[in-house]
Amino acid sequence: MCELPFKSEILIRYIKNISNEQEKQLIEDWLAQDKKNTLYLKQLTYFCKRMGEQPTLKLDSAVAWEKVAHRLSSRCNMKRYSILIAACMLPLIIIGSLLYTSNRAEKMIEVVAHQKMKEVILPDQSVVTLYKGASIKYKSEFVKEERLIHLNGTAYFDIKRDTISPFVISAKVNVKVLGTEFLIQEDNNNTDVFVTDGVVEVSKLSKANTIIIYKGEKVHFDEKSNLLSKDKYNNPNLLSWMTKEFIFTETTLKNVLDQLSYSYNINVDYSNCKDLKSKVTATFKHMELQDILYELNLAMDLKLKVRDNRIVCD
Image (cartoon, rainbow, N blue to C red):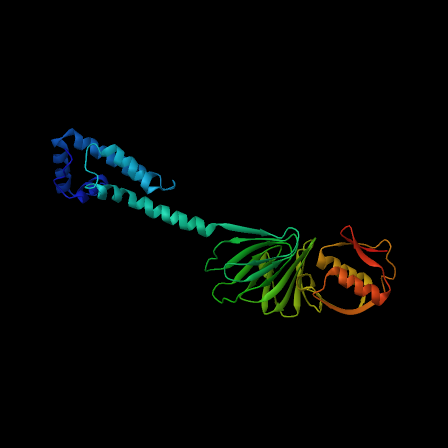
């Protein structure tokens, strides 16, 4: 016998052990009328407890409903008792939804610039340009408290301003900004932070070891001494690896070739090179490496060329 002589909510409260004395008596009288009622209650109670004890399992409400329906359909009209199953499943549905949302927010994204520089647009629309070999990790969605990323290598940052949620970079040094443009450059045991616009806070280990720098200033971190130092910089080719714009003024040929090597990710074979101390004054904008070498050859009577992925002097 499956007809309920009372509201289905009373049975749910009885299963959850929150019914009053009058409701308990009503349920006990109903159970005494037919053994099938007792079996039905046991199955429904077992199902509800199983759902409550395993909130981390992947939720498939359609499958769960099908299993319960298969067990109980021979005894009861499932349409009449759908509210009972729904009441048991609701907590799991809510928990599953929260877990899904939480896991989605916690998803980590990693981007690596393997063979050449790579531009990355972050969730807040800030832009990061990675130098070859650099990588960043960040959450698919930033939290309100801070916009945190992890950096390994060299990268240029153009950060969208947000006074409520500071942008924080965890690298060999920690960098904190609200909205600005700057370069973090890692080289062996040294890390430099150059500000091209705005204000940047650079720290290491503690607040006592924190330096504020502005446009035209840099912080140098020596990993061996674990010390930060502040200075000014004036390097027109600081971002040449990214912009492919070069300004050389009385620059030695050796330094010119070094800059081209870094910017175009190519080695230089100096074995046959002469006059490396000779000076170069020239400007190159958005040119291919071979074209720059051609211009240098004409101006300085050189024989520079690219061979086997190296700059060589013939």
